[in-house]
Image (cartoon, rainbow, N blue to C red):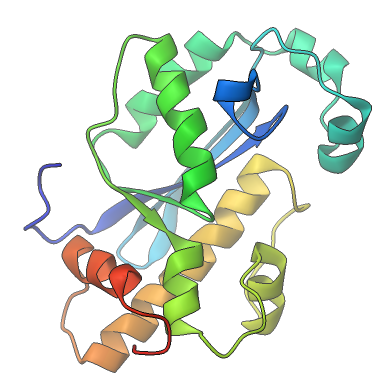
Length: 200
C-alpha cells in the first residue's frame, strides 16, 4: 500500500463512535476523533459529530453521551468524512481494535467516492505483543496500567483517539528501546504486530 519502505514520522490515530458494530449491519458513525502523532508527540487534532441518518438506541446514548438531538444538528457524514480524509492525508492510520474502526473508515470513504490507500496499525495487537503480561488490553486498562494521560471521557471519539495516541507513542518507545533502533518505521511496527504473542 505504498510508502512502506520509508520512515513514517507522522501517524493519524483515529476513533469512531457509532450506532452499532458494523456498517454491514446498518450501523453508521456518529462521531470521529483524529490526532496526528508526529515525532513522538500529539501535533494536531480533528473532531466532529456526524449525521448518517440512523437513529441511536437509548443504550448508545447512555454509553457515549451522544444523543439523537446532537446527531440531528451535526453535519452530514459525507461532509465530515471529506474533512477527515483531507486531515489524514496519506499518513498511516492507527486505531485501538483497528478491525472495528477500519470498517467505518472504509464505509465513510465509500460514501464520498474514495477508498483507503494506506495501512492501518492496531494498538490492541501491538500492546498484546509489547505488554503481553497484562490481563487485558482494553483502552481503559492500558491507560490505567501505563499511567497514560486521559483528557476526556472514555467513549467520546477525540478523548479515545488521544488516549490511543499516548499508548501508540509509548509503544513506539518500547519497540525502539527493545530492538535498539534509531528510528521506528512503519515496517517495524507492522512486523511487531505480526509476531506471536509472547515472543517480543
